Image (cartoon, rainbow, N blue to C red; front, side):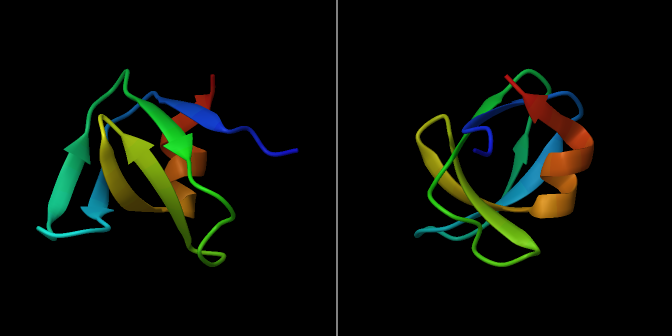
Length: 67
């Protein structure tokens, strides 16, 4: 089973999944909760600080670690 939470080791960016759309910087130390299955092989939906975001799967792999 894939980890459901990731701790950000190096800041990364995410795209707001709902209005208002925009890019958000997710800081080092943030905890991301995975929402369901990956959107594709390239994108993952996460929740951070009450925001629904879409992040690159590669960024999640390279910049975060399971908590």
